[in-house]
Image 1 (cartoon, helix red, strand yellow):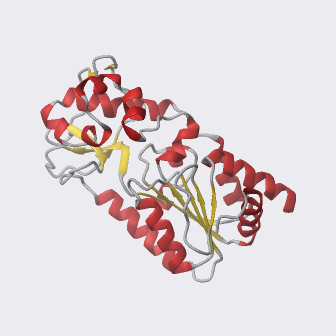
Image 2: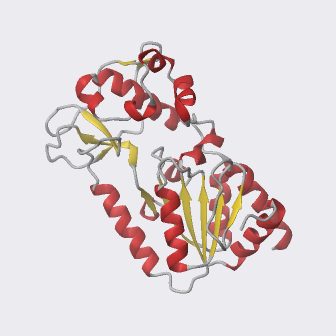
Amino acid sequence: MNANPTQSIHLAAKALLESKSIFIGAGAGMGVDSGLPDFRGKEGFWKEYPYLRKLKVPFEEMANPMWFKDDPHLAWAFYGHRLNLYRSTKPHQGFTLLQKWISSHNLNYFVFTSYVDGHFQKSGFAEEWINECHGSIIHLQCLSRCGQKIWRVPDHFRFRLDREKMYAHDPLPTCPSCQGLARPNILMFSDFEWDSERTEEQEKSMHHWMKTLGNSNLFVLEMGAGLAIPTVRISCEQAWETLGGFFLRINPRDNQVPRGTHSLTMGALTALRAIDGQLSLIE
């Protein structure tokens, strides 16, 4: 149901007050309000990486593990820049508002996100209540899959990069076991070597969480999840279809919703601020 924004905001705030649990789904659009780049379409991607425009390499081609074998310095220039950027960027106020709602209303929560920036953990969300379905850029795996377990990039580590030439200077990350090249623990396109162990454990935790909910007046909140790779959208819709409750999709473009649910055609931060303002009026 696409009611007018004022009505949807009021209904969302009212439903939040009546809920005991919240399932938060977040796509890449959640990070745009923090100032992170939008890779939507070739132009958005090439604006951030002009060198790849010269090579006519779109995001879907660059986000491929073959680069770590064919040109590791280029591969790590791309992913290293993203890691540096995500670590230096402060998560926007929307993360704080979500934390405030969870704390003040004693909400049981779980986060399902396709984004790899680690900003939910950075904002204080507990690691055990997060499922990063496409992995995490702050975790690494051995490129050759030698048997080494996934490990975290040290907090102090930053890549030395030549952005103009898209070149990551040595030393590149290496496996602590075999000393071979490491890669991000992110699911890429045409990726048959992704180590999914960490994400599979997170998924088990999520399914267990859902089984324990019962009749808990679930609030399903989806933000910044587009149609190009609809993993988050599908998971949020499935959670609502299975468990019921209130469903809200926040998306400035792809705002279509199933019958009986609600949407707000705006960015995540704007919507969360509006809901928070309404909460303060009706609490």
